[in-house]
Image 1 (cartoon, rainbow, N blue to C red):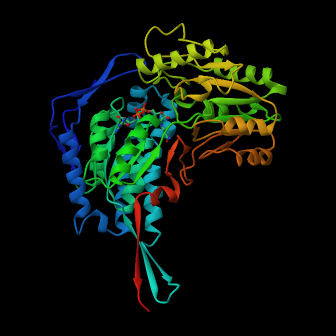
Image 2: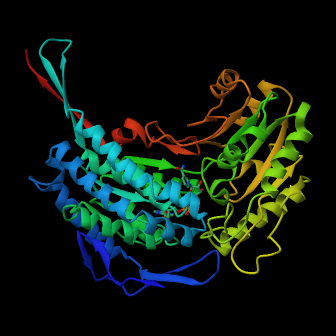
Image 3: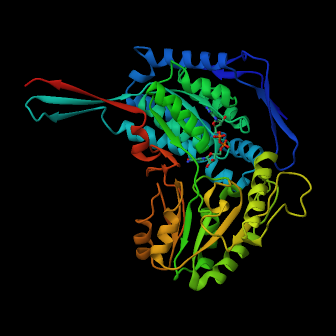
Length: 480
Ligand code: NAD
């Protein structure tokens, strides 16, 4: 069992202000994995004060050259590389992510993003001169936005923290991270790497806590910008606070994306990619195409192919390298997913794979990958985000109908189009109202913007656009 008794705040390991603890349970075995101090409002106050002091220091981080910051980010990346195995192990054991996925994504994205944003700022000036229309010159300056509150969910706790931390630090901001209570142990790996890299005091602090303390951080007078990933419900609450305070906010929220299978698609040739685009991380991934749209002309065949894919996946302990589907993060999440399965059946949809808990697992929060056929896009299981391994196969008549159904959603985050003709698939992809969409696969591209439309969020992360979210622009008009 992993135990910690201090919090990483202001560049030091400090005693927590409160006496509460957060206990992490393995969703694979239901055993206790570890316990850490639960951050309180007083800890948030201390972390924001440290971030404020570091940001406002006239010789501090925000005033360093981008090259000097990039050097520290490189050291941070090196330290994270050295602890990559520990990161994957911590994430996988806490949230049920199959270890191979944790090794490929959670261990890799943090260092990759630090290097990407470090290089981006180091190779770019902070000022641009423009000939002013009415004579003279304008200097357009990029400045860091200030102290950033980064609020992170449990499903990809490292990647989703670093899509905020990396551009924020590169821009010259200071950051207070609030991890989700379900995944706190990996944040110690992050903190130790930050310390090993020699991040100046206050540039990064971590306060593990629940939503009330998160709400305190969002509304804190010392914070200049909020970056949030999580549910649309929490995003709305955070947006209301930020609206009242006129505080910039980036929101990466839920999704219910469409995987559009065109009538010429060969799904068997893309089964691994289809898994990644529809069931990655036990269905606990925001961009998944959990509505599979299939042409009526090939409906039965596609239902069979998707069902065979789901039924053939290896279910097991998240730490077993053979596992493709691990448990859901908590008993609560499993119960929620089961409620949706019951709702699908009550609405008249037909289970063609899974449909409940795997028979051979007497411990852990497992749900078998489940496929529903005969789903209408108005059904609850087609409209609401389930956040588990549950797919709904919905028939369509022609391409216009497929696009209509894909766009008939409160959400617009990810999605994919499957076809033996990539040009044709791309033409369909252009018509889908979403933040990102894949052709015959779905793989996040760190150099391209990622984010949602409609209830899936506001703003973009990743790519140069993700950096812009941590900068403010100032124009200095020089008279002719
Ligand atoms: P959640 O919204 O309950 O919690 C996310 C984080 O926000 C946690 O750290 C939580 O403690 C904190 N939080 C919750 N309410 C808050 C509030 N009012 N003020 C401040 N902090 C608050 O979400 P979850 O259940 O942990 O995560 C799953 C959700 O995240 C899903 O809906 C999923 O689609 C979404 N998600 C979105 C993306 C994306 O990039 N769009 C990525 C991953 C997950």
